[in-house]
Length: 272
Image (cartoon, rainbow, N blue to C red; front, top):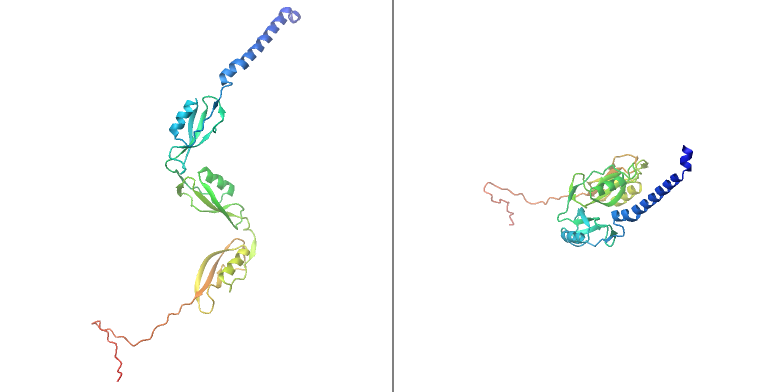
């Protein structure tokens, strides 16, 4: 039975017809149905809607057969309120009809955000965190501490309400705080020279207290604390600095006697 079917001329005709019909169907879908469905050979050139009001942008995009959505609002003093400052896709790009254009619109009021805590985060994570809050990373300075690239301090404390786009300065560890260094001999040095020697040793100057001294030139290091010979690199020393000893001299004069009447009864000198 199977042999008869395989050798039948009718079977071959049927298979041939199915193959032709399948090929024609594929061609119809590819050349006719899909182009109609996807608007093949149809395109719209996106107009430039930046630097115009949102209402004007809506009217212009609608006239081009496009849709729009306000994706973000930012404060920019170069534009009036509710003016478009950016768009995506950009102008002159060819897109399908009814494509949505995403707009960034200038806000009338600057939005405010709460500053997050980034202390103890890595520098990279701190930058990402601040950017996520709409804040900018300002200057980055380095101090000696054990954990390299860890944020030690931020210029604006966490929880502070600031305008979006505000700048936060960061102090970051340079990773040098795990070394033991010798405290240089600074007693007897002038303050600028002592500060220089401490910086060269990888140490920082903290509190500076002034103490009057008769025998030492002003602005000279008298002592420091903690009073150790070795310390971890990056630690802070407090300095005691001499200052001019002011002496107040009393002016000698005759005795002044004041009675209850308020009359000045200074004894008169008899010149006779």
